[in-house]
Image (tube, rainbow, N blue to C red):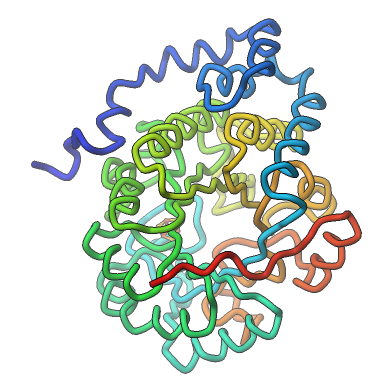
Length: 376
Ligand code: SF4
């Protein structure tokens, strides 16, 4: 079987039967009546998610926001989980035209050794974090399983919750990483629209759309506690990409009900890697998206990164967000040496973890530094 063949036990086989053109048409022909019906009973319903993501829902965003706040507080209380990325390497064997780590970019490459990782760990711990997200470019040989085997136990000894955002791996590899303390994996499809995906991913393993699409299945089967989905908003029609991500989430939750799920909603900025968004998403659009997903799924973790502006982030925190980072560095060794200019992308919110914690408390929210600890 080729890597691109749809496996009947994976999401790709469901995806193969999705009529993308019909979904696009349905989003843009949804009416106010559809939105009002969706608002009455949105939980777990893909037809409701479609209506809430549609342009017809724009006049209802205030109403959606109020419901989103209510549902988030009911499910998560006032808690906002705090995590920090720890960039291990900016080596990458892929060409993605929206990313600073793309193999074609002439930047200095660096992979942290054990001593450098220890220095980063000390600084991250000193900020108060107990939950960390290991990030690396996708480089199978130099930043692959051999490296992860050495790094994970080291990091897990210092933090109780350990997430990763690296290249998609096999189910067996994920099983091994779980035994070393891995709790969560973020694997963003970037876009679910194949032509656009092919246009932005020119070389490397990431060109394999289906291998990436089926990664959450492998993660769930390997027993990873939490799986993060995401699309890069603006690469293609964000309403459609978000809706297909909803289909993906719905499939996963039905099939792997023990797993927890999160979504991230990063926006493609006009300046990132020089690629202009095909369809820019406004601030209001992002609010609509967050609220639509909260109404669709009240148990979903929704993550907010430091890509967004401080004033806008301050308003989003209460809306439906359940996890955030603060004081992030996006380069390997970025906490020990902040001015290395090796960053993946520029962050917009440069406030420290302590400043964000103070702000959250002032707004009646509760920054939580420790997610639950898995038994491993
Ligand atoms: S998005 Fe990921 S895979 Fe693509 S170039 Fe950047 S680090 Fe590499």
